[in-house]
Length: 137
Image 1 (tube, rainbow, N blue to C red):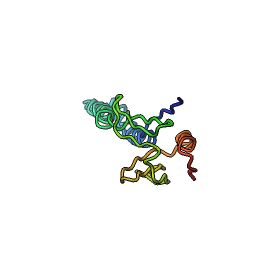
Image 2: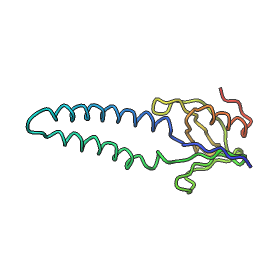
Image 3: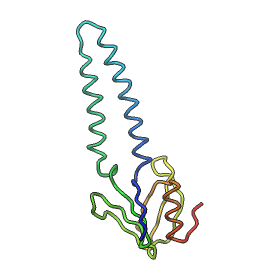
Image 4: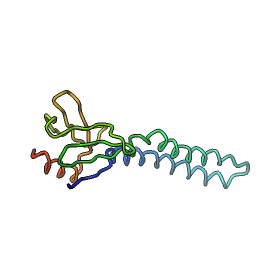
């Protein structure tokens, strides 16, 4: 029984974290520039930059740490060993390409209307093609 395990929202996590890091870099530049002036209130910029990173992980904890398991029974999305969503291969109607939050993704639709969105990464596409016997473009 071979399982394939992936982070579900890796592309979204990387893109959002990179945007936050750009803000943090500018705040840190401002902090280091403020050190050369007399009354130093640059510590506020340092606190803002740290709080942005902490807020990213606090707010996004649920979707950052979701895992996808793909095996011969189907696709499972887990968060802290609890199943969030599950589709068996017999329940899947279509697998199509889409853009979710401006990132390439796979939209997996079930016959009952449920959908799962996964990042369109080569290992995920290969695992789905192996188990579902459907070709993804």
